Each structure stands twice: as structure tokens, then as C-alpha cells.
Image 1 (cartoon, rainbow, N blue to C red):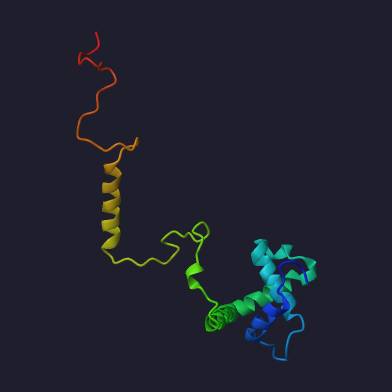
Image 2: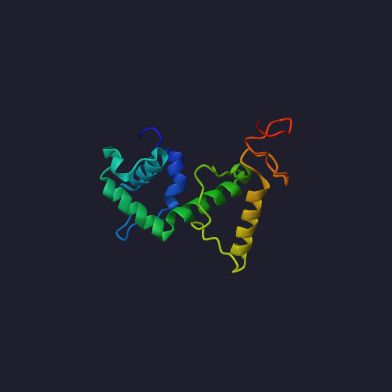
Length: 156
């Protein structure tokens, strides 16, 4: 067992929630699950998967099949439900790192009523006029020209 691989206790919690193949259990199911965990823990491309996990294409293909089937979502929900039943789930500790969870509102599927874009643009334009480049409040006083001197008299 390599560093970061599932312990026997952890595997006993996860294995019952993973689907079995049409011909029975997959003998290397744990190895492929550890491969997926390694890939996301390391943040590395699939092609950089260590050879101890087998061909990267196999790990990737099985991952995609399980992801499309919703296996990982079901697994997460089942493990959280088990922990909650034992009183070990503290969902107050759940957080999302905003440095990795950013998306432009167009990418996030933000839906706007037809009149909202114009109102948002007008508000943005109004906001631009509130502050100047040096962050001082905008005033209606005229800005002195570069040739004016402090005493109020013009250049001689």
C-alpha cells in the first residue's frame, strides 16, 4: 500500500457502494479507485499516473464511465449518510476554496430577466463616475489647469 492509498478500514466503507462488473467483481477495483484518488490529490494529468496503477487509459476510461453513471455522487452521499447516522458528520466544517471555485457569470449559467442587463450596465456606469482614479470622491469643482499657480494669478 502506497502513501495516500485507502486503508482496509476505508475500503470497507467504500467498496459496497461501487458497482460490480457484469461478470462479477473487478479484481483490481481498489487499485483503480486509488489511481483516481492519486490523480485528483496530485492534480496531475492522467498520463502522469504512476505505472503501479496500471495503464493510465484504463484508469481514465473507468473513471469516466463511473462519473457518467453518477457513481461518485452516490458514493459521497452514502458515506456522508453513514457518518451522519453514526453522529460523525459535522457539515459545519464543509467549505469551498474560492480560489478554485471561480466562474464568470456567463460560465455559471446565470439567467437574467430581459430588463436586468440594461439596469446592471446603467448601475455599472453610474458606479464608474462615483470614484476617480486616485479613489478620492468625485466633486463638481473644476480641476485647475496645469498653468494656474497657487495664488490665483496666471503665468506672467
